[in-house]
Image (cartoon, helix red, strand yellow):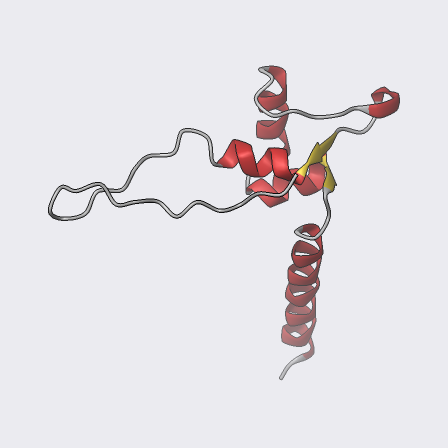
Length: 98
């Protein structure tokens, strides 16, 4: 295995570790929130401008989000699945702790 390939694999593992640690945090800064949502920082700023997701900005500097608020935003406007027979499939509801 070449050195460059090994370095690339280490970087990928670091990214995966960082993302898995992010899922454990209850409060995320803007950069981490954008990664968590899978959107760009500029898109998240646009969502902020229309009050799409609740956020906190202590000391008027860094923007923070509660992970539960991010999850709730991602699950807005859900649609109901329909099976081949035209019957509505019941959704399994997940309990969310506050």
